[in-house]
Length: 334
Image (cartoon, rainbow, N blue to C red; front, top):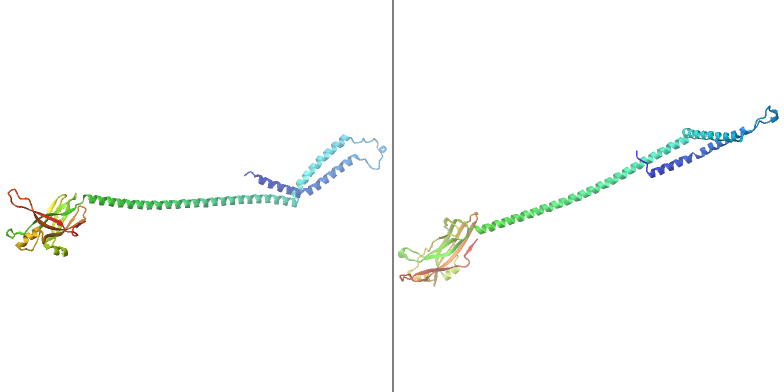
């Protein structure tokens, strides 16, 4: 059982005062009756018989002692108090109005206490509900923050993954470029027409692998022709249909291919072609190969060749040196 609070004690005291005030009139009437009864008893003890002279009595009756009268008054007062107490208790227990007032007061106090407990319980529930709502709101905000952080983490991971993939692809491509095969077509030798030895004008370009890994499936489509400057300016340099070769060219290795001119020139024009005065010897073509990573690469080339006098041999025989240059807009590679 809980200890009444100061507010509860004040309410009980107020109800008790109301209850006592409601019965004060009846209690005052009872007290007045008791006082009247006590006075009557005192007077009867001190009086004498009416109509009888003292001399008529055989022996005179002694007058009452003052101390005895005082003692009788005290006894009468105690008796009166006892009667008042009994009367008050009897009034409370048997008077319907007083008993109903007492029961009503007790019921009112109990109802007030129960109502107060219900109100306090309701207030506590409201506070708990508010706290629960606040906690739910904080939890929702926290979950929203967690979801936002997770979304940012996912985006960050996606960006990091994409960046890593791009870096890996770039590094792989860079590594492949460093070690893959690179074919170049260099100006090599040439032969001039000498029908007595069954020789035609021919271009002999050199294929050189300048990379660090082999070039696989090396094949080419190429040809040669004798053209004048005007013809070369408008010439399409078309490629033949036939494809030749399918070889492997290791790193830093070279191979020479021969492109023979099908046409025969007059003997008087042989020196004209060799010196590159009016006509020149052209060789052009397309080289296709694969690197070790399986990627296909192409090289296009077009060369112009002529002969220059060289230093005489040891025995005094004159020599010639093949010279040439690359024709613009026809030399590409990937």
